[in-house]
Structures are given as C-alpha cells and as structure tokens.
Length: 242
Image 1 (cartoon, helix red, strand yellow):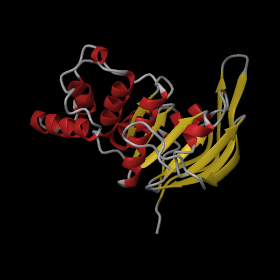
Image 2: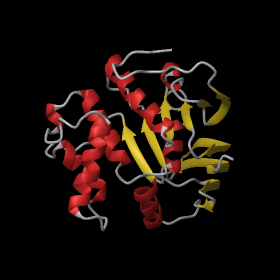
Image 3: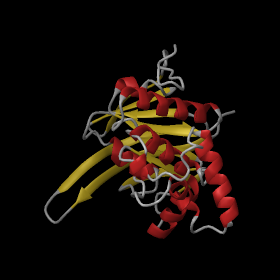
Image 4: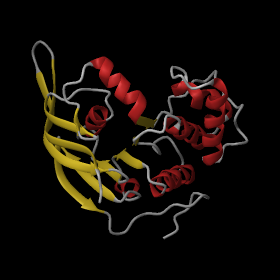
C-alpha cells in the first residue's frame, strides 16, 4: 500500500508589500506518495517554482495545510524548516549551484559538513555517489573543468548524500544540450526505479513526460493531474529508448 509522503490542502501563497498583495497559488489540493516520480509542469509565472519552494521547506505557505510524512508542517519556524530541509530534501537546480573552487568530491560532501558523520565516512559516501552517477574518474576536478552535464551529475550526487526522502529537480536540463539532458533524466529515472521519490519542476511537456505523473499548474491553479501513459525513457548514452 502506497504511503502518502506529501499532502497539501487548500494551499495558498501570496506575497505582500506595503501597497500590493500578489496572489501566486490559489488553493491547491493533492497528494504525492512515497516512491512516486511526479512532474510539476507549467509555463513561466504559473507558480510551480513557488510551490516547489514550499514543498522543499524553502518558503512558507500563506494559508492551508502542508502535511509531510504525516506531520502538519504548515506552521514551522524558520529554524525548524531548515532542519527538515537538511535532513529530508535533496535539491538539483538548473544552475547547478556548485562551489567553483571546490572539487567534485568536496561539493558532494558539503551537506555533510555540519553532521556528526566522520570525515572518512563523508569521503566514502560522496565517492560512492559520484561513481553511481558515472563520475568516479572526476573526483578531484573542480566545476570549471567539467561539462554542463557533469556538473549536473555532481549536483545530483550532492542532493543524494543526506539520503533524503524526496529529490526536487528544478528545470535540471535547462542549461544542458539534449544529449546531456537525457543522461540526467536517465539518472533521475534510475533513482526513482530504486525507490527514491522524485519531483521534477519543468515548463516542457517533453521533459515532464519522463515522470510517471504530471501535475499541471496554470495561473496558480491545478488544471490537470494525470498518469503518463507513454513515458519518455532515456538511456545512458543520452538517447531515447522506447
């Protein structure tokens, strides 16, 4: 039986300054089960990134409920959100967000820096993850010596190093050529096949169809939520297979 990992009820988000109220999300209701691969798809300005920031504990909702692993996390304080984020969430961003002066290995180890995990274990775990994404031969390379696709694979390894409950990938192929983009999608599909929960944020239908389910958002509202009948499948060489 599937276990609900994320549940939102009547979720609304608005931003306020002295004169204006900007309403972004208008009362969303959905659930995401543990082990799902879901695309949150929508055009620029639809609210999909705002939603990801709330689900990933980077921002707070305005009204409504956000249940994570059975716990209502809607009213958590900033420090509590930061703790949840560090323990439960792995992020992969379009712009990679790597430290240019650090090696691939050091970048992947970074989230473990403030844990009680020994340095030997940190190195072991980061090395294993870089090998898993095909970069065992690039451990000592800094980002400026890596291709865009390799940078994104370092970012995926870093997102996995804390063994998160959910991996958020925000336009992960946006800065990549089509072959490198498909190699990244292959890694995300493999991670999901291994049981990881993956939430992909994208504006592209083609990219969204690598997931098993698509939640489509337009103007802050869910306009469609369906299982993908004909998935796009990528292979290690960066090609479509099925």
